Image (cartoon, rainbow, N blue to C red; front, side):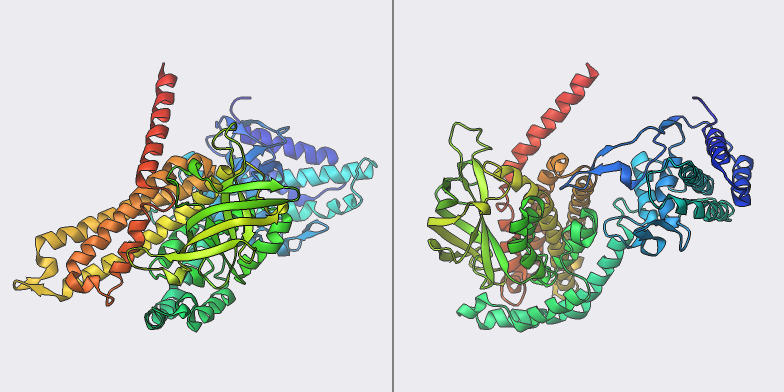
Length: 614
């Protein structure tokens, strides 16, 4: 309808109120007069505007952090979309004590609901997505307009009640809302600063955190400094003492003590957005922090493979499966393992898996061999998620495999032997075991999501999990670089400090560059998952899976070189670090598989661009 959207909106809602009014409310007239007198100077914005943009009109994906649809477009028009943002944020500024519904008051408003961002976060995200400045001009005008609009709406509802046309039993209460809404709009209109709240991202960060994310990151850093790092030597001594004993599979008492402390502080299950209220970007930086100590993720119940298994059950599990397995895992009552890789086939091509899961009445029977089943040696491990073949070769190769829950106590499930990584059995993390399944019978209800859905689940599991892996790896690399710099500053060779040798100085610089590159790529992947979901982030996830382990291998290798013979001994953690990060170039798929996938996706993207030009 052309220019003048703001003026039209003020007149529309002013007239609607006046037509429905049953008594004079001075605040409404004062608010509408103020709006007319303070129309934006450039009232010429002509973009699609929803007109009723609120949470009630948004349909979210049931398992991913993305919007499927925005509904109820009856009030849509061409105008200034900032009006939609102001209307959406109005509940944050709801008049104190004013009851909106019989079950909702401003005392338990949006600020206290997990998963709903703070208004500063919301505005920051909006401005970033629109590529506009975060200082929204005429912000107080649009907030005041939103409250005039709501005053007009509730007056209309009350007018229909008086005529006997309202279906709501308590519609008479809307009469009490008009004046507080108008008065609140007036207060917002006359605020001295005509701008949006200060955005979260004020320091030039490329990937800003939410307010809650920043707060929890600082809590985690403090907890690590005060409790985790001081306990590190005690934990190392425990595993050194029981290196040749079965007690190495148990945990030192300090671990359980730290876990209880973390849980008491609310630093628990931070990896799962539905519980923590954190985005993948928020948690990525927390994962980096926990990567600086080998047992830290477990302290916060954020350790692999349990995180991936919990994500699977949260996203795809039945209510029965969640109650029996997910809830205890979230509470930290027991652990789990994941059985996918097989010794008799090249498991880098996961379609080669031969372990069979065959239906037999109201049960499934599992037969096959698995190895590198991480966490299976933990005495608290109670259940395995097993991937195997349920379909015939007549089906698509990606529809032949399924995932099923197998309790470790099930007859026929045999823990064969621990596998070592460069001589380390990884006992602190429950080890990596060869596991055999011989006529293992489990209830048919243990199948996850249904037959043939294994690869679908695997992709959902590995997306966020790879973000966690990569950021923990970056934390490990930061620790290795710290060790390298400390050694280079203390040791002398040929009359000068190690860092004064140009080659060592260059190694330090190259490590810093590599770490920063890997972090930015990983945060970019996390942000993509936050905004468009794991499926749309496949290329970014594949990229970081190659970049992060390669970077860490390089950093740890340079640190070993600077530390000399001592670096290879038990006096330094570098040898264990190298074993960890080198294995990551195979775990979750070898580099070469990811490189091939990146190439395929890149060629498809380039072909789309070429087709669009043609």
